[in-house]
Length: 112
Image (cartoon, rainbow, N blue to C red):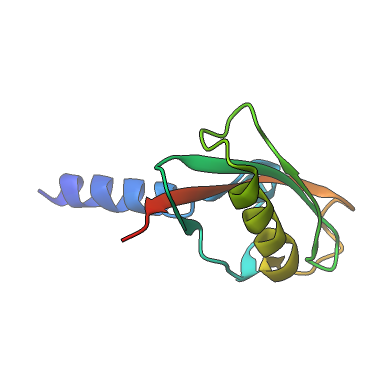
């Protein structure tokens, strides 16, 4: 029973922050100002964006990854991209690369 609890805790923490992935997550760079990683849309699926973060923690580049995204709506892609560029912030640090690469996944939830 103890091992089952440890296993569940491990997988919960492993996949709990799966919205930000890539080199930025592997290097352990923390998100200082989070965004909602889900948006109301008319279909279910995901939007995937490749990002670059500067040493100040600002997202400087956000490119829609059309191959890995399952939502094809341009309107939702622009809304999510603007949200990432204006509101998502990471911790500052000179120990990180000048343009730290990562990936952000936005999940779709059906509107009520």
